Length: 71
Image (cartoon, helix red, strand yellow):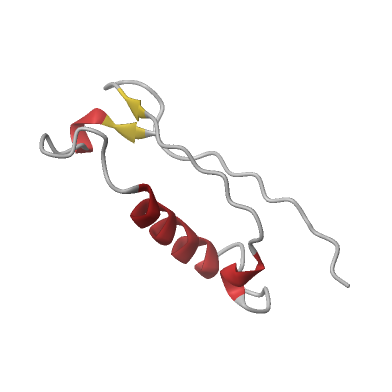
């Protein structure tokens, strides 16, 4: 959930979703996936959506990580 105040006027839909995903996954590699073999290559499904929110509304991201059966 992106605050409208961070949305450039010449990009009314905000930052490209692929760029947001890259930053998000890079952050997960430093935290949640820090000990996973291959880091974020363990992600097999990624569903993302950006929502622009007004001042005072909640910002940030919701994440759900589910285990997969290997082998």
